[in-house]
Length: 153
Image (cartoon, one colour):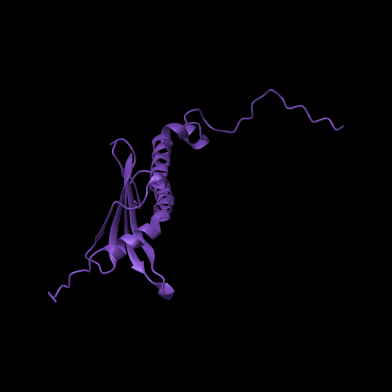
């Protein structure tokens, strides 16, 4: 049996300074704790939802604002309906999740917020969770009354 070399008791010096905790990962919980908590809460909310609560037309043709109100959050998807090959599907344009508690993060594609890159990535994940309800959303859009014509006809 091969004997493994003895690992010394001296800790490995990674070259980081004690004040450089963010880069070494020691304060990730402090920095991203509410962001991770918010993402998990919104993700579970969306998976527990039964479908859209509100669907309304926007001023753009074939564009809708779909809202799902959950236990701790409200998510809104702005989407177009496209029909490639005759089968309708949603083409997301914008997405936003907000919470009832003011200290929780807002998930959106806003590029100006703090930690925007991470928040935009998590927003994309939440948008995909929202799209689990795509069949119910398309059914709700089809159930809307016909749009009024702009020329009064």
